[in-house]
Amino acid sequence: MKYYLEFEKPIEELELKIEELKRISDRKDMDISSAVRKLEKKAKELRTEIFSNLTPWQKTLLARHSDRPYTLDYINLLAEGFMELHGDRRFSDDPAIVGGFAKVNGIKTIIIGHQKGRGTKERIYRNFGQPQPEGYRKALRLMRFAERFKKPIVTFIDTPGAYPGIGAEERGQSEAIATNLMEMSRIKTPIISVVIGEGGSGGALALGVADRVFMLEHSIYSVISPEGCAAILWKKNGEMDAEESSKAADAMKLTAAAALRLTAQDLLAFKIIDDIIPEPSGGAHRDPEAVAKKISETISKSIEELSSKTPGKLIEERYKRLRRIGSFEIES
Image 1: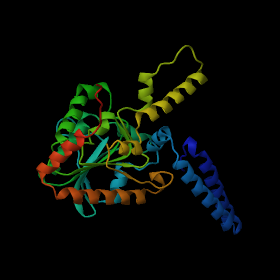
Image 2: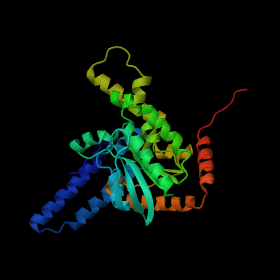
Image 3: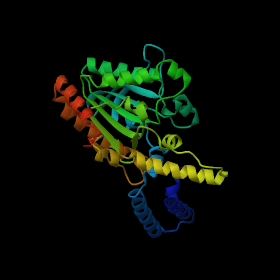
Image 4: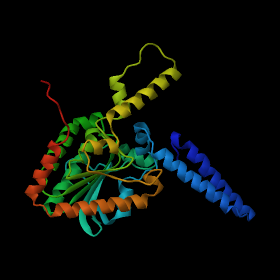
């Protein structure tokens, strides 16, 4: 059963009507194909209209959509011969990060990515895609492996952020992320990162120091979630009942999402990412195969461009790329 977000309700109504008409025609041997085609055309036009005018908050909800393809979905669609590797060789294996050998369009790579999990049981097992220190150390172990054997690295970013639990902090969460940032900046092999859903804070950045960074059209990438930003910056004034409080919280999330400039379009304008990978109307979950094909083509093209560079040149350009991010003005 499809899950529809609140702003997709008009689309849901039309698609339910189409399904009902199809069921009726199957049972009663009626030819209502003309009516179905008209409704399908109307639904397509409505999807195009709605999804071409999404607000930053609506894009945030879409990036978190429960039907959206995750790392393992894309690996199954675009990679061949995936062999998963486990463990950080220090503490344990972290299911929130998956990685291993795979071929993308015949190119041998190491693929690493966040995995949120589908369904309650798997989401708990994957810790809702929130890695712990051993996850980042596993990722770095695989990156060093790729460097040793001169294989390109592909990372898929999709996490609300690193796990903030006491155990994770005791085992060095911030140190693990910081080490990844440092080591990725000087790894002597091409690194391509793709934000496929939610890129949250340092938990995402720990897989995002790359030569090329791409985002799916309806993904997000930000230093903090809109909810977290709103909770820190704005306080409720006075006493409010439950309904007023809920409305105020919703308004603050919308304001925070817009202020954070977290959409792929914003980040491309700021030159933080290199390009946007388009999604079908309605989001990546509407046609995962088509999106996987576009990701595969983008990865192959990037590897081809980067493979001609020497390790020293790669590191130099990666450093310059990072230094170009952001701007400032000096007041006289």
